[in-house]
Structures are given as C-alpha cells and as structure tokens.
Image 1 (cartoon, rainbow, N blue to C red):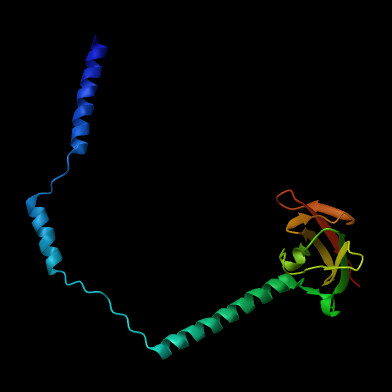
Image 2: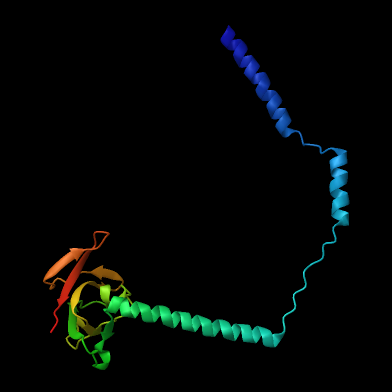
Length: 185
C-alpha cells in the first residue's frame, strides 16, 4: 500500500513540475523597465568602415609577397630534409655528393605512377614516374645523398611496395614499405 502512495506522490510532484515548465515566465515589471531604459540610453550606431582603394591594393600586394616568401621558405626547408635533399634527374642532372638511383615498377594497366619516400616528404605529386616504351614499366631516376631511405610506389592512388627491393620494413601504420640503401664513395 505504501508503494501506491509513493507513486501517487511522485505523480503529483511530476504534474506540478510539468505545469511549471509549461508556464511562460513573467519578468518583474521593474526589471523589464530598467532593461528598456538602458536600451534607449545606449546610442548604438553601425560601424562605418572606410578603406581607400590604394591602401587596399598595397595591403593585398604586401600579403601576396609575404605569402610567397613564406611558401618558398617552407618548400625549401622540406626539400632540404635534414641535408638529404632529392633531385629528380628528369633533366639528367644530379647534385654533387648525390648518387643517381633508378627506381622502376611494373604496372602495365596504370594511368599514373609516382614514388614517395623519406627523400621527398612522402609527397605523391613530387616525383612522377614515366612509362617506358614497353608499356609495362614505369621508372624515375632520383639523385640521393648516401643513406637509408624508406619508400613506396603510388600506383593510381594506392601505395605499393617494391617487390624487387632487397630489404623492406613497415611504417608506423603497418603498411609495408621498401628500403633502399644508397652507398657513399
């Protein structure tokens, strides 16, 4: 019986709470009047902006120059990569102290193949490979300083390891990479 009484009391409390929540609150008249007077006293005007055309053009030019300088600095630092910079020898040139390394992969049905690795910041657009006349093999020659480099091929947007690599490892995410050791003189 006491359980029934508790349920009746709870129902009564819930009914009152529901009524209170449905009732629209009415602010006190004095508070409402004070807010309205404060709003009337506030002299709020829209802010008028005025920019002279030459000042705007000069600001845009300065922003472009600064942006270009920052971009150049960032790209230059990325290419340096701690002294192990890369030069794709599409022009046939390799920097002094670097050795030409030829990378090749068979991908006969591929549309676009590139190489990514420690030497180019894993940038898939940085070193595109070219298709040889056999129609199956893609290659690129890269000038690398002596050292150990992890790399992979990007075949139509998908990573692929070099099956001809003498040594392989995995990246931090478990994706297999190839490793090339570039010897010094």
